[in-house]
Every structure is written in C-alpha cells, then in structure tokens.
Amino acid sequence: MIGQVFWLTHAVLFLLALVGFACLALSMIRHQEDLFGHALNALLTRGLRAAGWLFLLLALWLAAASMGWSFGLTVYSGHTSAAAGLAFIALLVKSHNRERKRGRR
Image (tube, rainbow, N blue to C red; front, side):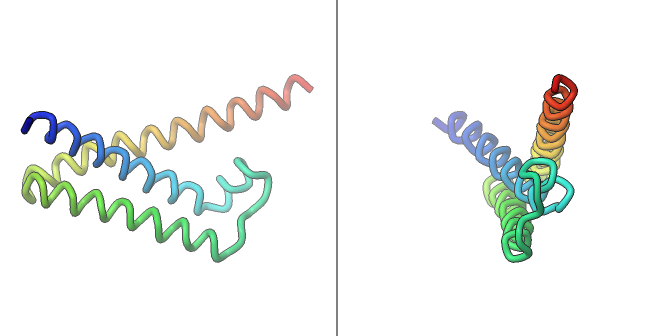
C-alpha cells in the first residue's frame, strides 16, 4: 500500500508540474499566436501565468510535505525538469506539424 501511495505521489507531482508549465507556455503571446492564431486577452494571459505558478507551487508543497524538504526538493527538481521538457517538445511538435501543413498547400 505504501509503495502505491509513493508512486501516486510521483504521478500527481509530474501532472501538476506539466499543467503548470503548460499554463506558463500558454501565457506567452508567442505561443498563443502559434497555437490559436492570435493573442489572448490580457486578463486570460495573467490568469494562465498565475495558474502556472500556482500549480508549480502546489507541486512543491506536495513534494516537501510528503517526502521531506531534502528528498522532496530533489524529486521536485526531477519532475519539473521532465515536465518542462515534455511541454517544450509538445510545442516543437505542434510547430513542426503546422509548418508541414503550410508546406503542403
């Protein structure tokens, strides 16, 4: 049972970090224009930025509360690195697919 909770904590940490970085990416005008074709309004952009930081802080709190500060910060660093990398790769793939579609027309 304890092992299942341990892995569930890791999964939740990774998902919180991934959603946080996705929100931060979507709060950038460049990515908004790439994904939606236009910039979102300023209120929504600020909300996405705040939500991104909130998700990352929530992940930090969960890591520290469940694993202690020393191991929790180490785990947090790993999960945020992996989540940031995945968000970055997703943006690259989306941009590459969009460029391929433009080239076919």
